[in-house]
Image (cartoon, rainbow over all chains, first blue to last red; front, side, top):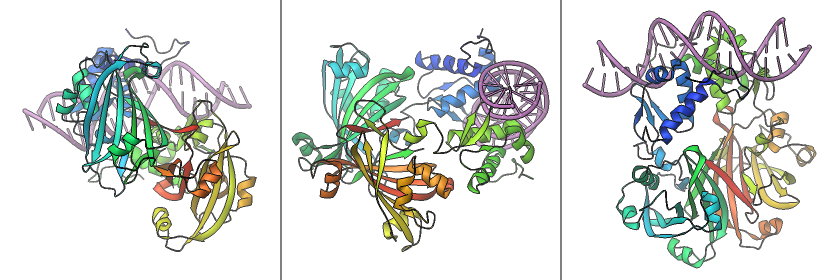
Length: 247
Length: 247
DNA sequence: GAGTGGTCTAGACCACTCC
DNA sequence: GAGTGGTCTAGACCACTCA
């Protein structure tokens, strides 16, 4: 039975308890990304609350991009593998200057294994010296390289990731992590700076050494605000810009 | 009387009609920023709908940062002049490297009047040659200059804006535009690029000429997605970074 | 036509704020 | 204690999807 909503002292409304119960279902893998969760009335019966209460819980989770409602069909676990093109660009804010929506193409360059240094262990919340996997890749827009990134992943969570897997996979990087390792990225923080291009980056991006690049450092989180990815990208903003909506 | 919600073909639910009615009250200035709007039950009576329907309309507007709910007190028109420090930093995403929340201090340098060129007229949605006001200013963090910006405003909307007014005013720039000109910024789009510092910017920011700076171009919108501000800033990201939350 | 989410209602009670 | 927003319920009906 559910805790009575009105006892307190740490008052938590019923719909939030329902929310965390649904969240448990997501974390435990009971409902996988892309799959449908039970209908509102079914959940209401299971949890012993009214449909309106379940509705409010789901509403909040839909607003947080954890669930996706589809009228007439059902409620689904949000996924990076769905057909909605927006979910592809939800984390990549780079837009071509001419406005056209170009498909970006990922070119994995390297993938190797290492031990977590101080910075990696701190940002990923793992032990110093714990295994990590590092991916180096290029992002092309219309066959021209625009982004070079290095991605740091906790080795235990993504054991078995290799260059071959990256090259084979059709779809987005987060789609791969989701379908192959069952880890779904829910939100991320990006820190942006302007930096000068070093020699190797300049060559890869086809710009002059020392020319200004946009440095984008990202930490991504899965359910429960657990950090599971740390990456640093260098963006060439000669023909593209980073678009951000403030509200 | 309200349009019946179930006639269609362009079906618009009742609560959205209520929403646009409340929006009218905001645009017309019936309820000014910082002031309280009528209670839910009062609005329900006025519009001839149930309280739940008004509630849903207000919920959406609160999610869009147009209104602010305060339990036990009432619902208020969102303002850049409230005491909540978050509303100050809602549009300035620059964060010091050391993590401490520093107060930024604005130093107006110049304020002059001109005629809108092609770019200004297009982004601000005004006629070519229409009057515009241009503000040039520095942003200091702990007495050190970190940002230099130029702000383009439609002259008719902000008639009378001068350097003296800018220097006198205590509070944020958007707070000034709001209390003095009755224009509230609701959302904005920012386009970021990495650029090399030109001579004058380098001097003002205390960096070497040619060193990388973050160029931030912003278009801000008031109610009804009407653009009313265009600005370009150059951010020194030596000791600060631009923080963005992706979700 | 059955099942899903979406809207709308009316009413009860709770939590918070202020007088 | 009166007034506000916040939660929860139960029930009706609508819009959409799919078979």
